[in-house]
Length: 324
Image (cartoon, rainbow, N blue to C red):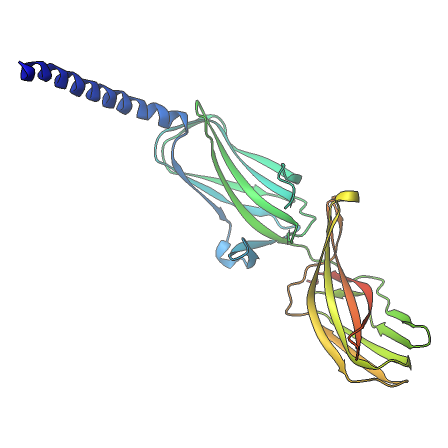
């Protein structure tokens, strides 16, 4: 009697389980439909195999290689879409964007360049399709920059607005921008006198105030008065990144190059030559108030250290630019 009673209960449970599975199976296409069709998207630049790449930090421990473009160069290529199911869409477009992103600001990046190109009107994608694109004469006036608290970057964004779906198809591909600059018409030298009253008086001069990124800084340092015991002298190049404005302004200093140019005590009338090679270091051009968001400046920093480890220093700003 107990067995007879248990049989219909078991059958009832089995039918319940089957019923749930049937409902789950029936709901799968619907859920896939709601959250967007699956497809593979690849963005390819025209003649990519001949284009130079730039190594850029991606995280603190990893790097990536981005294709290099110049400020006035057209950005041309194609997008390859391989749908894995039928895609009904409201339109397909690709955008070229230039943005400034602050590390400490989690809000929306500041867009200083936005150019949209429609690739397809509303329709259906069922087979592999290529969409060519060509951004002509887009003003990429700022160089790409990856700093401590800010980055200025360019990228392509491909979008498919899927019909009756909660998730659209999006693919992004970054690229790097360099801007060549003309030789400065005015590039006078730097000459200054600094010192400590009745103790130290020096005069230094540099041949120019503006240098290209592979240039050589040439100069001289004259000791006009020496009454303290100098141990050695250093010359360094400091990069100063400034972000924000007013009370929310941040300054980050980074010593890019550092050389000892004198070891031992100088005497009155002595002249120490200076020759600082900029080639081979990770330098950028000088950025001045880019969209009032950030600046990057460079300073020659002369440091004298006496026998009691006291340090005497003088900074002088120089301008860096990119030569073709």
